[in-house]
Image 1 (tube, rainbow, N blue to C red):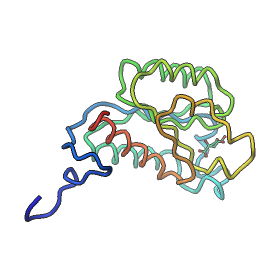
Image 2: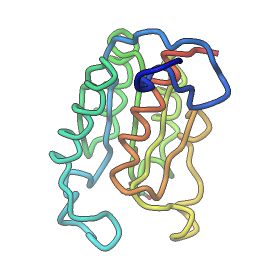
Image 3: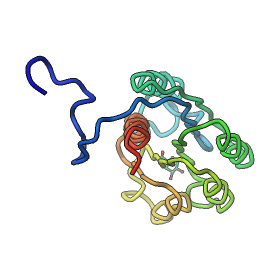
Length: 170
Ligand code: DQA
């Protein structure tokens, strides 16, 4: 680009120099058990931001890419599975923090394998720096990307990644 300021869309994040196309659609941002207590629960590990704060930031981040968000949290495995099924018809991508179900749920893994778009797994804490049992993730067997240990910023990084993948599908 000659003269003027470089626009965000002119700068390839990777070596891919194709012009990004406009993206539209809804990202399902799903949260598993105990994340309703974010901000109150183990703030030394998970920080002081609430899930409502995270939702607000996700809506703004997605909006900056022209995308919308359906943000939801449940302590029930079946509810998360039902939302993943719903995403098959309504979502362009899933960002999921399955919380403790990450390490236990074949059912959530199976549901995600029935979803065709990009799936990004997010963990607020660095699960690899904690107890041994947190190192295994059933969800990672399906996820296209995994973000851990970046705090709640991980959700925003995941949304950026989804926008990038949708704009430049390989
Ligand atoms: C978590 C990590 C999980 O191991 C844990 O069970 C959670 C939250 C995280 O965001 O760091 O509840 O997914």
